[in-house]
Length: 383
Image (cartoon, rainbow, N blue to C red; front, side, top):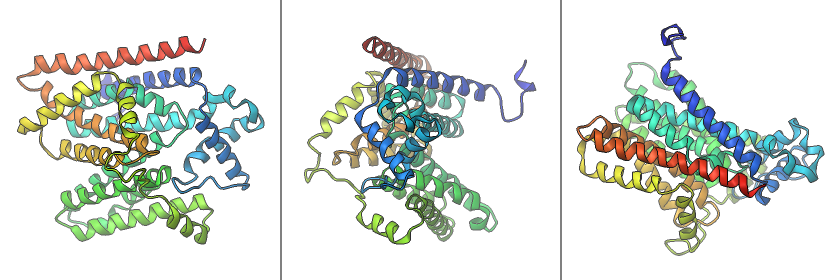
C-alpha cells in the first residue's frame, strides 16, 4: 500500500517514527523484565498505595504525590497491591506508567525536532533517544526523571509555540486557551515530579517574551494563566485542601542545593556515571555539534540556541545538587539531543555531508550497538 493512501496526517515519517518508538518500547520491556526493583522504586509504590488509602501522604518537600500515585495506581489497577511482599514479581506492570511517559517524551522530541529541522533532524533526535541506555533506564524504572523531563520539554516548547501565535491579528489570549491548558498541564507534570524543576519556567517565559516581543503584555498574561492552571492541577494531589497545599508550597525544597561549594562533592561521580552510561558516542557528537555551532553561522539560530541554553541552565543547576542532580541531567540530555539533531541536520545538508555522515551515523550506530550490548549484558547477569 502506498503512503498516498494513508490518512493525511500519517505518512512515511510518522510510520518510521512509530517503528523506532516500538523498538524503544521493546528495549524498555526487556530492561524492565531483567532489572529487579530498586529500593527507591518500592518506596514510591508503597507511598502511592498509602496515599490512595489516605493513610499517609505521598507528598514531601522534594515532590508532590504525582510519581508515587503513578506507581500506586498501577499497583491497584493490576491487583499487585494484594501481593505487597511480591512487588518484584510484578515489576513490569508497576513500571508501565513510566514506559508510557517515556514513549510520550520520545514522540514529543521527534515532533519538535521534525518541526524545527525537518525529517532528517527528527530522525537523528529520535534515534539518539531510542537507543540511549540512559533513556531506556529512566523509562524502565519508577522515578521522577522521565516524568519531569516530559513535563519540562512540553512546558518550554508549548511556551514557544504560544509566542509564535502572538503575531496574529486576533484576541490572542482567549484564542490560546487550549495551549494555556496544555502549558498548565506541562507545568503541573514538570513541577509535580520534582519541585526544583520550576527553574524551567524561567527560559519558558524568556523565550515567550523574545519570540512574542510584539505583544509582551499578552505573553505575560498567557504565562500567568498557565501557571495558575498548573497550580490548580497540582492542588488535586493535595485533595484541594487549600491550607495543606499552601503549607506544602511554603515548605517545598525549591532548589535542593546539596552543598555550599560551587560544585557538589558528589556531582563528579554522578556526571561520570551519567556519561559512561551512554558510551563515547554522546560526548563525541556533543563536541562536534558544539564546535560546529561556534564556528558556523548557519547553525546559530533560535531553533538550536534555545535547547542549548536550556541544556546549559539545567547542567549548571545540577552542579550544586545532590539528590536531584540525575533528574536535572536527564532533562538536560533531552534538550541536548534536540540541539545535536538540529546542528547535525545542517551538517548533513552541507558541503561537508560526506564527513558529517561518517560522524553522525557512526555515532548513531555506535550508540545502538552499546545499547544492545548493555541490554544483553543485563540479561546475562540476571540468569
